[in-house]
Amino acid sequence: MNSIDDVNTLIDAGRDPNLSQIIRNFPTGVGKKPVEQVILTHSHYDHAEMITQIRKEFNPLVYAYPSYQKADRYLTGGEFIKIADRICEIIYAPGHSNDSICIYSKQDGILFTGDLPLNVRDTNGTYQYDYIQVLETLVTKKINVIYPGHDAPIIVDAENMLRNSLDNARKTLRSKEK
Image 1 (cartoon, rainbow, N blue to C red):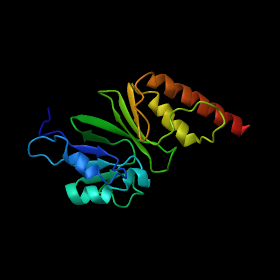
Image 2 (spheres, rainbow, N blue to C red):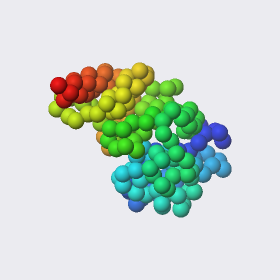
Image 3 (cartoon, helix red, strand yellow):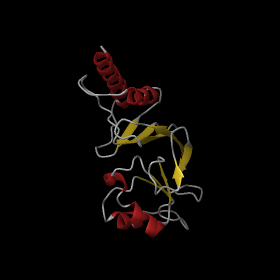
Image 4 (cartoon, helix red, strand yellow):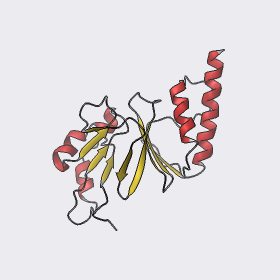
């Protein structure tokens, strides 16, 4: 059940030209705009292309990392923002792009990651220290479900996958430093 205090939020605007129609088909609560805010996990076209259409139709506030000039408000990490009926933490997450953020709901153990690479299976990559810092932050969180930008949700063993990814990324960085 929606409450008047809930904040209808779209995470990433994507590039589907049918997005507005899809949104209009969801129940939004009496007297509520279908989209009150959009949070971009990063500014790549496949996550932000429809923002102009969404803004024109629903007039939401747009949140993004400061390099995205079309944002109304900037998120750099460490902020807490209401999404639906939850307070979520914004985590700056370079690794896929320099303007990437993750969105974490502590109450539900849910993490939205955009395109941040999460399943590091080997030690052949080119992982940087700032990416490793992101993984170090994520492994301190209770995470039950991960919603990546393009793949199916990770609903089994998400925390273990993150710990293994951190170990492999660290090994990669150490081997490159030698």
